[in-house]
Image (cartoon, rainbow over all chains, first blue to last red):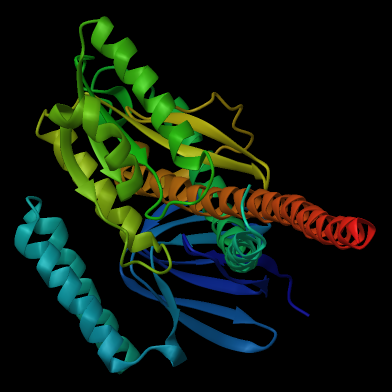
Length: 130
Length: 288
């Protein structure tokens, strides 16, 4: 039995998941990282992407659109602005997300960041195969 | 002296009123439970958010180069008051207590020579503030169509508030809402959201930050504002239902009392009429 970390996924509206996981793959703002037990305490912001959680029950993936993750030696909490389990994600929802991001990019003064969010979404879409 | 028929009608109408207030109370109780659950569910996010942000804020400090949302723009002239009230009435002193607090603060600020601007959320507060402060209104957020307050609503308000701050139209932003304590007690609360205020916490763990502390903080602060507003909206929602529930409970009880009183009056008049008729019969018989 591999050692585990306590994984929590919370959105502003509710707690989406909370269970022990062996590893958590996080789409960090500066690149993906995987948190396992004994990880250095880290706080990283997220980019839109896929959050993968490996636990005793298998691999679960969530679509997150931003927020941040707090990693400690014994736990990982992901505070996501929006988070949807990948298997519940529909192409229509995905389209809505992309449309939102495009809209934000159109009005946002910080063009680079907004464009990156759109690009991240497209990358995630390709990765998720939706 | 109302006639027997009048009294009967009166009792009937009070009974109908009681039915309505009773139904409203039960609806409010059901909604309260949902609102409380929503507030409960949102708590972990808000707590973590505040914890991380206060740790970050303590690390970065409010010195030169700190994000404006945290350190303020160096001025204290224009105050934006976000007054959150309900969309519906019949909830006791719920709206009045928020408006009272906001009005008090506004008067203080004006007396101190500051400029006050008011953004209202929910139409009841707007109606109450319209008389004295309509010149200070800068906007209104209508949540009348919203069945369940979502994070998106809070984000909308936060965007509006932050746009005003960035455009220099507001220096300090304070939100007014009712904090839910129990069904019978809601505490009107004023909370400053911009510049953000955190209680100094002794951060226990030392974290690595990716990207830098400053970048994360700059990224988080707008979300923090939205989260604070969201929490306030949820607390307000629960408070509203709580206030309505106790107001309707009182109304139901009052209606019950009134029915009792009217029934006694009705019985007395009926008895008086019977006695009168008897006396008439007896004196008629004696006169023979």
